[in-house]
Amino acid sequence: MSWPSHATQPSKRQSSGQTTWSASQLVDVTGAHAYQAPTAGQSRGPCPAQNALANHGYLDRSGFTTLLQCTSANVQVYNFSAEFAALLCFIAQFTGGNLLGLTWAIGNDSSVDETIKTACPTVLPLGPLTPLEGGLICGVANPLTDAALGTPGSGLAQTVNSFEGPHSMFQWDWGTKNGLDASTIDINAFRNFYSQALPDGTFDDYAIFSRNHADRWQNSVATNPCFFNAPFAGVVAAPGGHSFAFRMFSNHTPEKPDGTLTKETLASFFSVKVNPDGTLSGKGLGREQIPAKWYRRSKPYTLQYFLAVDYPPLLAAEPRTLSIGGNTAGVNTFTGFDMGDLTGGVYNSKNLLNGDNFACFYYRLLQLSINWELDNAVGGALLTVADTIGGVLNSVFGKLISTGSVSGCPTYANKSLHSYEQYCGVRNKPGALY
Image 1 (cartoon, rainbow, N blue to C red):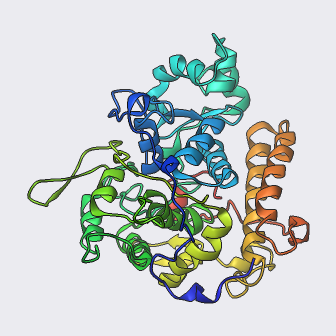
Image 2: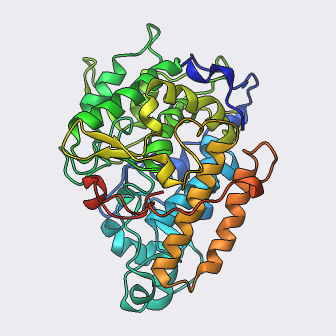
């Protein structure tokens, strides 16, 4: 995958060529998909897009979903490409769900333990479940499966360092002022972004999102003594949230088929109330809502497009985005991890963006992490699962590589992937570091 010549310059909307429009792009928010605020026991978490899907019944309203349901909903509502949606939903399920289960919580699964027992059979039409089947399929805690597979996944809200990273668009960092909550919005961060709207009241300039990514990254380093920029969660997923908000939440109307993101639409998707006097206040966790008369993208949003077009301006705004590492001795003590050590000398910070290196690096990183996770969780008994997962990774990443195949990606012995003892952000929140 070659990086485009404009990669170093944050630009405006960066039209994705969506010049056509169809009435079929209108997303239904009536009837079965009418908005319902979450009730007690329903799980909501750090991803506003998934919260909105659950609030409108595109995901199960319990907040407990499946890989297939998650993929289908994100394609149907946001027009992610099927492969990109499946990859993101798979990583969420793998990091936040039961290892062998097909379900995962979009927030904390401890908050829906009782709901799971009744909701899971409705999400998966399997009929009544025995305790063993419940543990294997739904992630319901029971000693039979916990002994073999470890405890059930903790949900997306607890995937710090593996999927959800710090320096998100508006949420608090895990372990900072808001304690162990990385899902609740920091209303002051939202207000700061909101104040940067263009004179027409929109955010139709991608540079606003690039700047916000840089500001949030720098704010985390300056305020979070245990800030850690993990290989996947920090380097890709957290900045990706900025581009996803720009691409996914924009309204692709007949008048503006390439999309426009107004103040009102942004607030609706981030659970923020715009008061009559113009002030802003948070609605509370998980109140994200798809606006009426909101039209999705006409063209699917692909991983290739994200990496080639949307990611480079984020990197240009804050080049340290690529630096795996964190604060080591309090705030403003960011120390990057040596890329050469991480990859056995195959890649370094200077060559990572050359040619196919970036795609190959992440392909091998995910491959190694998944094998490590399976091997340590079940003593190697389920390594055949890695072969199936490997097929998915081969297909997705093969399309990013100039030869069309991952077979030419260099291998490296990753001896340091899970050895970040100097970073309190890892010591305090251990887990797989994708």
